[in-house]
Image: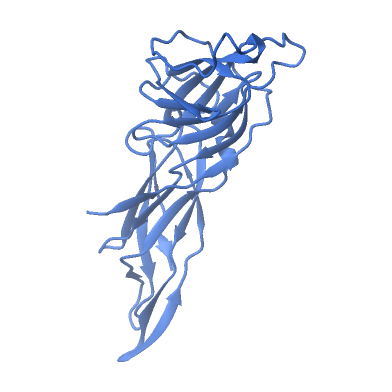
Length: 275
């Protein structure tokens, strides 16, 4: 059964304000050569920080279990207009030495995963601690958009297009969209400590759209994790001529209620659309 899918870029924002269950990320050495954003001879060392981003695949994560890092992710930090990109190693870590303290914009990208954008506060040390603290780290999870770790929502669309016969008819050519219901669900996949406080988060590719085929079937592959994520399934409204009596038709508009769907990695949910 052939079906064309279109993945729509969307932004789901959330904030992380609760530091009660944060795990420390160990800073590992990097072999990559990167461009420092400061000149040691002219900048006060107290304004410098070494920052590590630890990227993990959220498809295997529940928000509490230990997950191996994701190798090959591109992590880009923007400080004062200077962009520095490092590719994570086998440990999933990218370390940026000698960043100026301040709010840093970070983008994390990997093939077949959601793109993550966040702003991290690298201004101050931990309250009551050494004000010259020079290390910070952030753990982030990104979600698989296809293959292992993703989830499937599928079903068939029906509508009563012929009232002279029993049962409903299948509906082809209807756009069906799955949208992450609430970005706050993603808080468990963003962790930070001390000066690595994340101020805002936006995930791309958390909205997926497809069409019902000639058989009225649709199938959507959505980002997922080992912890349930709730999507809202939305079927487009449509209008059609309806047979109300032999030889008689009436132009009728159809709509279907939005439906919440809980998904988990590697699981298929079947949700019919009954107009």
